[in-house]
Each structure stands twice: as structure tokens, then as C-alpha cells.
Length: 233
Ligand SMILES: N[C@@H](CCC(=O)N[C@@H](CS)C(=O)NCC(=O)O)C(=O)O
Image (cartoon, rainbow, N blue to C red; front, side, top):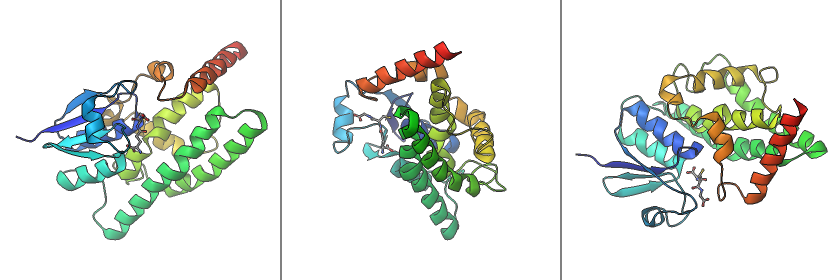
């Protein structure tokens, strides 16, 4: 009998990636909810370098870092591949997954805490970065083609987390008008039944991001922006 455990957090896009991959593969697993402000001794033992969730424990062996875990899952459980089989297509999927992670994530999240001219600058930069993803979707429903693949799973923070927080803060970085393909992709993604069962409720996502997820200053900043957005309505 295989033992599969996931140390994660329901509000984390990184942990959610792993749950989605396990779901797509039909792998049964135990979910162990970690408290980021009081990490369990097991988490610290299994991920002593980064001390972060998610960690997948497969038959007693830990694997850390969500992108690494996704590739591991795809190699171990062969049904419903999340990476293409063709070497060139596979290399491209890895390229765009890394692009989403290393370029898009920081550029998008930067827009959450800039205001005024700095916001305009950060928004323009995020737009330049997103344009490449928009073009990559040409003629496709998902980055993986007709079905969800590695890039879709990695870019989950754009489809749900970023858009949810953007909406709450009243920002307009990624809109239906300026990125129609990305918007449609995000809608398809969050409305997919294999996916949406793992997404945290929107209101909870906004409310629960506690330190140390986000520093206390950022919580205060979010609260002030939310108050300003509410006052402007
Ligand atoms: N690069 C990591 C990022 C994981 C990550 O940032 N996890 C956050 C939760 S969203 C965490 O465990 N934070 C606790 C901490 O930073 O101490 C991955 O892809 O798995």
C-alpha cells in the first residue's frame, strides 16, 4: 500500500498546485494542514532548507518545492500526463512554467504594494511580462492545449490568487480588455471542476493571509487599500 502525504496549506497556491496534480492523476493522499506560524517538527525535518510547504511524502521519502514535486508526480504516476511526451514540447512547457514562476509571479505581486506613479510603472512592467503568456495561448484553451498541463498548474496564482486580490484592491493589471486570452484561460481554469474544489473561498483568501505569509506591514497595507476601495464605492 502506497503512502502519500501532502504537508500543505489550503490558501497556498504552491500547495494547491500539488493537490491539483494529485487529483488529475487520481492519487489518494492524506492532507496535513500546516500552520505557517507554528511549523510542525515533521515539516522542518522534511524541508530543512526552505522550511516551507508544500512537501510531498511518498513512502517515507520527502520531496520539496512545488515545481519539483509536480515533475516527480508526473514521473511516478503515468496516467493523465501533465508534461508533454515529445522532448521539445516538454522543454517548452518547462520553459513557460519557469517563466510564470520567475518572471510573472514577482512582477504581478509587486503591483500589490505600489501606489501612484510607482503603481503605473509596475503595472506596465507586469503587462510586458504577461504579454508573452497571452501570446503563448494563441489558438489554445489551456497552455497544455485542450487539457490542463504543467504551465496551467504553475500559473494557477494568476488565474485565482492574483485576480482575487487584484479585484479586492481595485487594481487593473490583468483585465478582460487588455489580456482577453489570459482572462478566458483564467476563467476556464477556475471553473474547471478538477480545479475549483481546491481553491480557497475568495473572501477567506483576502481575510486570512496572516503573518508570516505576508509581513505585518503588508497586512496593514491590504487593510488600508481595502478600506480605500470600499470608501470609493
Ligand atoms: N518555491 C516554493 C514556495 C513555497 C512557499 O512560498 N510556501 C509558503 C506558503 S505559500 C510557505 O511555506 N511559507 C512559510 C515561510 O516562508 O516560512 C514552492 O514552489 O514550493
